[in-house]
Image (cartoon, rainbow, N blue to C red; front, side):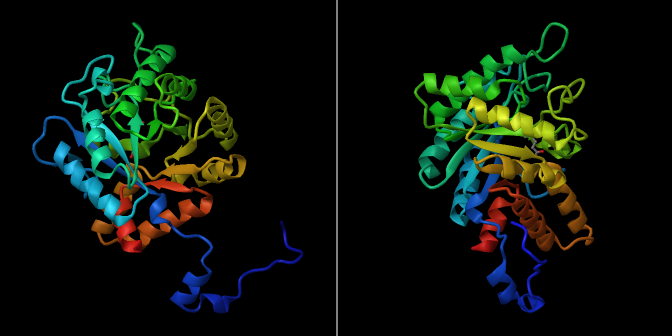
Length: 328
Ligand code: PBG
């Protein structure tokens, strides 16, 4: 409601840090942070990701340690990404019972499954030899409907392994409905879907493609991801479709360049809104801080506060564990 006259908070409430903390309307909650973790098949030592200083591809063992640390810090969830040893055209390792993500989920379910929310990214690009998020037709186009059957199978494999939330990130039409019906049909009515409802064709995913070894071998993802130049109303239509198809959480990705979309979602949808602070957002801050050009910790907190202020209830961020530690 608009007040009858402009009211701004008295400046004396800003004079000390304790006062600012006392009256702060926006806070970053550790329990609303989700730590992304990469787990790679066939390695014996964690491998640093060059474009994401501080982030590694984990071994099956080291990911258990990282998850335990995240949980001890108080994060609300962890989301797993798998990197298979072998890729093929249909991404067979994505739903193999002994695929790396399924193995890691099984470990984590027994280690920390009752203390945090185990999430799994649900996509094919890490698993396909061509690096696209779906199956291809003979002419090299992404085949939307054939891909939905693969997503359905992956969802069930991840649920069997212990995922409580699956997060389809491939932007195929109808993916939420296909996954919901597959999960329900297999008896996993309690497994929730976090839909990447507005996922933009973004340059900010660059470093992730090193981390997950999933750069497309030809072309790009612009035919299935959203155009950054589209009106936010387009994203709103996508999110309403996902809600109608059965999404439980809706996500915007990237975060900082799309705060307007986050706030539109928060206003339009009753469901929890998640935002993914992606690899390029992480890399920008780390690189500038390494050069002494930005105050790293303040910048991190400012970006997370801005994303919360825009209306995100949940934030996926590579700094989740660190920030949760700092806030506790
Ligand atoms: C696709 C996927 C991507 C990210 C998460 N899931 C990459 C893409 O669409 O190219 C990006 C996350 C990041 O940049 O941190 N499986």
